Image 1 (cartoon, rainbow, N blue to C red):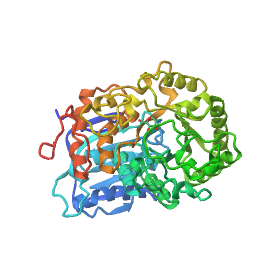
Image 2 (image 1 turned 180 degrees about the horizontal axis):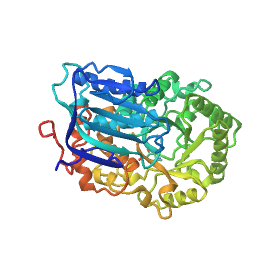
Image 3 (image 1 turned 90 degrees about the horizontal axis):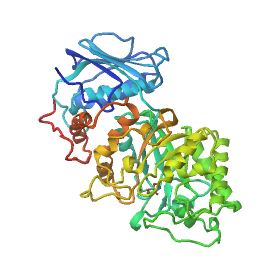
Image 4 (image 1 turned 90 degrees about the vertical axis):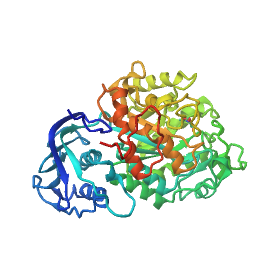
Length: 505
Ligand code: NGO
């Protein structure tokens, strides 16, 4: 018996049709059933044309034509939710159907993983002579949760647009749908704000270690948002407040309670700063900054940080967070904040991001439970499972270990809905893996920490429960050659029996 294809995330259900396969040939075409599904068809053509060297013409026509990969938008008729899709592969063609373009896009990523790893070869040069075989399957699939996120800290070390786009393109292969950008912190302010231009021009100058930093212009930020949107990923911008604001305080002395200037900070301590709560200028600052960020962001969420504000008194903290929530609601957005913000008693629809279950911090659990009691849902990012800046093991040079080592198994082998007592499936909005960049200065280092762990987090957010690490690591092993084909600097964990091109089956 052949084993099921090594898909990550594992689909809800898969039927294998032994002896059946479809081969993409020089005269295969792609069909979409209307203009709305066309962009997904074009994306698929973009994935396939270069490595195969085939023309793969794209046409608007009904599905079911021989030798065609058909993408059919069923506009809600299937009724299984926006991201669901079904994929059938038979000898005469491939049929992908979904209620929404988003569902089609998720299905395209499954199809991509059903093809040989050489499909990922993106380098210029001759196309690859492979039989482009897709095994005969029938897949029904939909996600467990609607929030499956990756967070990039672009504040401690700036990540230029090209690096962010590359990350998006890798993450969307694993059906992640949220890109949380941690845009501001003590060490840098990375997004331009017209009414407060020194935030980026001065506050974005440096980064950790004192090297030169950077920031996104509004056009660059829009470029990231639309690149993500084409991949059905929503950007969630974070402006971290009232702590983690030293870069802002150094850019505008009037934001400090004493009105005095500060120099830029390039160390890695946390809990070093606070906005001056109650000062008129602070309120104007927050309102104007958030208005510009909201205006730039088509997605429904604004993240306002709220973590580690120990330089702010508890009363000031509560008053500040409540005020910020008011501003966000007035802008028609949904507020997301780190778990500490739960102390302020948020509105029912706001989201709380659980993170601090690291050494000696039981309060994260308490805060998460009380948020749930008030009607907030949780985004699950426990630091000892989902923080990708934690070292894999004692030999990892990058990263830190304040929440312990997080090897590939530890990042995968847990169930978000079993994690906090009295918090279950329906209290959870989803899962997210942050990567904090105090020790991570370039894309190569970033990828080493992110992959393969992010694939496991993606599976936890998408797939039904009930699989084991032993089964997962065999599937994961087959993704090595894919990352090699793209030139991803992933961590070759000794606990995974990595395949290479020679023994790829
Ligand atoms: C904490 C802290 C960040 C650090 C990170 C390092 C949160 C939410 N605040 O997580 O500022 O960069 O740990 O792991």
